[in-house]
Image (cartoon, rainbow over all chains, first blue to last red; front, side, top):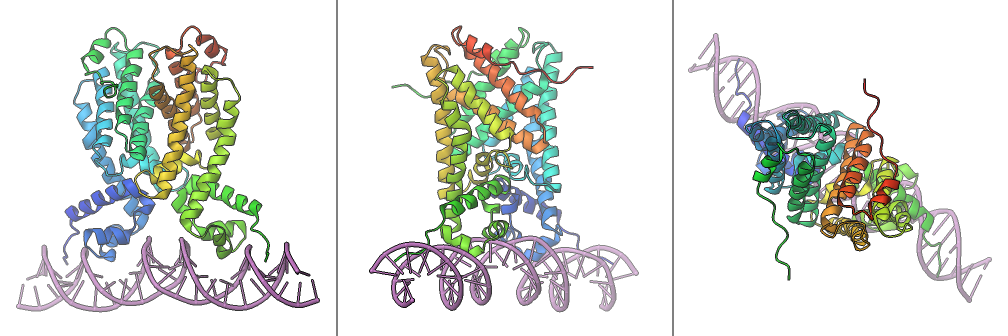
Length: 219
Length: 219
DNA sequence: CCTTTTTCAGCACGAACGTTCGTGCTTGGA
DNA sequence: TCCAAGCACGAACGTTCGTGCTGAAAAAGG
């Protein structure tokens, strides 16, 4: 009683490619046949890894979450709590979007917009991921406030909302208009936003960040 | 040489319904067969109005643009240039999203995220609409600065980016988490943002706006 | 009234979709 | 060495997609 176990490496390769495709065409635009053809395997062979399209979609989300954690969250968590970590989180997110770790920009932006108005397990999973990201940013902001780097009247949820707004819009604008200036806009906005809420204890941290230069030379 | 002309009213009804569906499921999720069944007409009859799916998608975008202009832009243009108009533009946009004029939230948010990484005429049309909206907000900001209601060093494009970021993220968050608080967050952020750039001449305009109340009663 | 012209429903087509099935082939344990 | 578990494959399932074709009903012009 023995057979070959399904290769985990192959499975990961499938999911990494699936996440790439879904970041451009969405999780519905991701089709099993084209994914299989892309990877040079048979449709049914690939299908066997997951058993249903929905399961493939959910597994793809999990795989993308792993990439996201490795690219943004975990590195930012190595810097100590406070304003520095808040900035690191934002800056790494923008870099992750800008470097096109997924060719269609942020994977979660695409699939969130795709599923935010459709019921189902996929939507629930995406919503949970979004909530967790929100909480992470808000808690980093809360840390900074607790450390005295942000003023007492700073509301972490409100500030997190604003920071995330700048990041996601930079992603959207840069994709739609092929305009890298959006990332500079976002970094400027975030720095201004953090500076406006920073105490004297927090300001030195911000001052150590390289200022984002203005737009190109004026005629 | 005459037959019945294609009924414009029917065409508009088709497109209005198409925009509703596309705001939830996207312009690819919008299928001719389901749209026809929804409206109680035959697939080929409906098809005859447009001749191709891409043309239906483009016509749907045009129709949604009309709704958008009527709900947001034209009403806001009736108030005189300046900070008041800037606020009106933002507030009307948030209201348009919040009232679910399209059941899937802002039509353009959905289709922008759907097509921002795919080449084609649909993407180009969506991008053009986005650019125009951006320019409109930026020019309203520019007016306010020229009128002395915003400080001289206010960059219209930068401020427009930030305002639009708050609006779109409110739309996305409220849809994904079914959370109307996002709209209050956006209004707070916009008011703070405008206030930070306002001169003394501009501040009275902002003060006349009803302040957005804080979150519910604290225990 | 008849003719002309256009609309619209019905049907069929090929392609692609997700999914299932049966069949070898590979491989680990007896 | 041989068996049997289990994966990958090709083929085919039924459905839905977008798109043509055809014929009947209907409206406008003479």
